[in-house]
Length: 64
Image 1: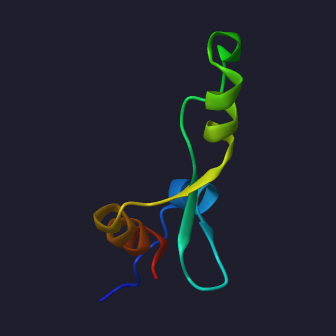
Image 2: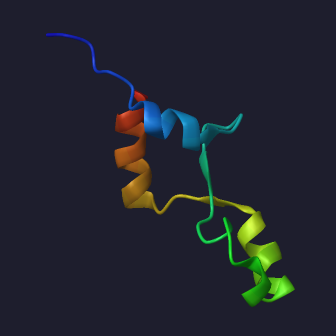
């Protein structure tokens, strides 16, 4: 059976922490920032964890 290929889109967007957790950037930070409150902009700037069900799928995409 051939090896699983890493999903290159996921590879570029997901960071693996030292403890093995997966981190992602939040959506809606790209443009139209003037309309968003500064509190919301700061919140969107932080990295987030994946939901447990999604994390399982992303790990498979990364070949972990």
